[in-house]
Image (cartoon, one colour):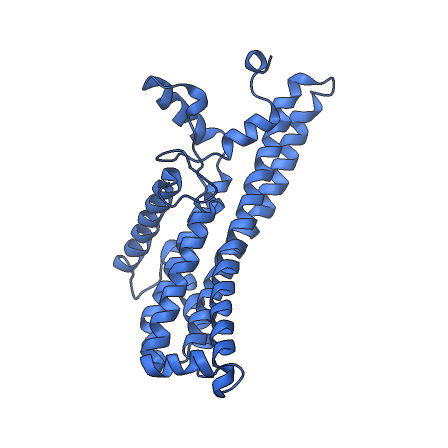
Amino acid sequence: MAAEHGPTAGEYIGHHLTHLQNKPMSGVIDFSVYNLDSIFWSVLLGIVGSFFLWKAARSATAGVPGRFQAAVEILVEMVDSQAKGIIHNAQSRKLVAPLALCVFVWIFLMNSMDFLPVDFLPKIWELITVARGHEAHHAYLRVVPTADLSTTLGLSCSVLLVCLVYNIKIKGAGGWVHELFTAPFGAHPLLWPVNFLMQLIEFAAKTVSHGMRLFGNMYAGELVFMLIALMGGGAALSLSGILLPIGQIIAGSIWAIFHILIVALQAFIFMMLALVYIGQAHDAH
């Protein structure tokens, strides 16, 4: 019956939440498996974001700026002011401020993929898959890279690596190792193991929460869009079907407007936390 009438709601959501992977996973954690769709869209959007920033820098004029240049200048000034308020080392800001700008633009673009109709790109990929001689139900594609935990944890781990580099650069290798064993409880030898353990827990907690926060919000937003999309599919299965498409349009519009705030806010929060963590790497305990 399911084959005759199409997938059930659970099958529809399950299909949309399945990644295009290089091979099936052999367990809960399998580092040999890559989510090819997340890699493709994140790289593509990174190139798009870099192109627009490059175009803005290349076409910048000293006179009255156009709308695009003005928007980019406002964004650059916002990021620069946040970096100055958190990182007081002017030399470090030469790298960290542009890095924060790239992070904000990149994550904003990846989050914005959620505004595309749920079935638009997956349906195109399904047609391509069928044309290549494969079965349609094996055409998996997810287009929101930040709704993939591997993407967001990869970003947060990258921020962790930057923090470790600045810890060593600012404090020196010996100074940082000394801090690992003497902060936060003091330099008594009996407290060295406790201090080191607390430092490891702090680094791990920052990294995991940094990535999980972005993933959780975008995953939930993607799921809500799928549930709204199901309202249209349910129109033919109920007596109140005439009301469901209207409800779908209203609910979809309201959620899309609200999601604009989420998309921008989550990109801003991730960028700000990255600045805060890098700023903490400059502070001595």
